[in-house]
Length: 350
Image 1 (cartoon, rainbow, N blue to C red):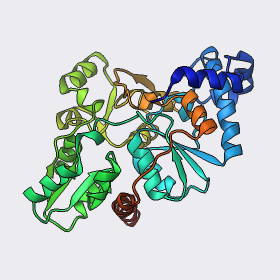
Image 2 (image 1 turned 90 degrees about the horizontal axis):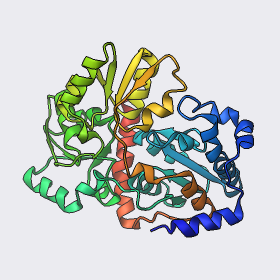
Image 3 (image 1 turned 60 degrees about the vertical axis):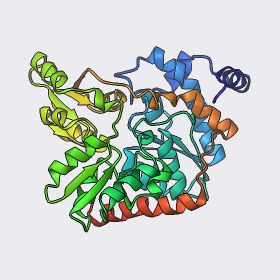
């Protein structure tokens, strides 16, 4: 576990990290990407970190991959590639830099390491886990296989390397339905997200989809009543849900899609008012690019994603911590499942 006191003291010795309005003014091009959600005086707190991180990336031949749930100062300030799980997985296969810094949760860093065994992969906080990924073990997959002999296992990328290695193919929320539909079996096992599986089952009625009873602590909190009450008090709002939400929540919304799908939907339609039924930072990260859209709450925050901060990213660049190591044998098996997903997605034009 990180010793925050030591980390901050060490960084303060090496860099001038005091808030600087002058520096913020000099970095207005970066601030402009988040001006709507972060006033310049607030940005002044982050500007010194952003300056040093972007400088050190060049010096150390590092690239930062950031999930759509990262905070705006990471998403817009230091990330080289942003996207959902599929986009980051594909991007990881194309990285030329020696070091990958994964701004996301631990399974994402594992995926990057699986796809780039020769590269160094760092995660700024090794405690950035995932309730969904931790809801199942390889033993759980073995139980499902015993219950449904011969059925292929499609595992969400929101799983550990061990789970990927025990699966036949991976999927993301953006390609899950197409992956399941392409399986050469009438019965398909999906793990570990029960709600994604239930939503896929409705989209792919030709398959019998069975699932593990895992869920995301962010998306499982939303209820159908929440959506209906919010719509009643906000006439004309378009409500967009992530498919990790329960099916009745998805039914109550106007659209459901992956984080990349949500961004595309809002960008294409530009509704006057929108509510994103997903993690809080999504709306913050796209609001400046869509000034015509008023983003309304409520939202739920992922405590694991928010463990990744600018000071921890800087610490990773300075010290090389925390390096993500995956057992080579597990990585080889997991790589097959992830690469099958990428290959099939490319074949299907996803």
